[in-house]
Image (cartoon, rainbow, N blue to C red; front, side, top):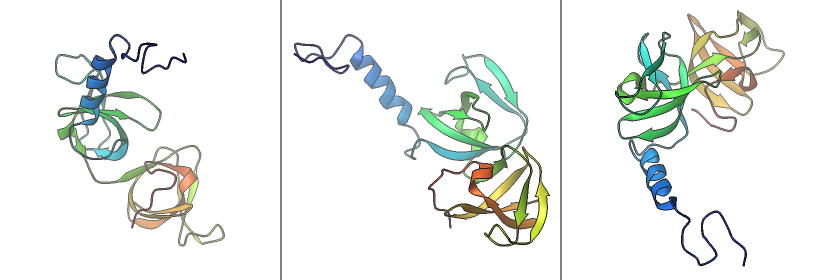
Length: 167
């Protein structure tokens, strides 16, 4: 008989499977919002812990308000996040806001007046610069960076899913 990871040859779940299923259900239960999703850091000092609770040690402190993060798991009032460089850890939900921001990933990019490659350049934006996400359409996102509003190629930013539509 063919054996899968979810059952043994007699049809019973493998040892520990119920515990794993329970843990995974708890990780995705919390806010009721979809996981994964993007959010932003609420303050300039956000403790990132090795696990979901104050008993877990602080591994580092984010010091960049409004930085976009991806919520990749939930446990009670704790959110496991990933930053634009792939680092993960747990933060309390109160340290996140739903405001959408993006960060320029890779190299310097031109902020354009319209979502067209031959559009007028409004500003040059350096790598790791953050901006507020205003809207997205296929291939492009409209952002606010300081006093400038313009369009960036979606491939040049992190903080929005490749096919996500934002109006």
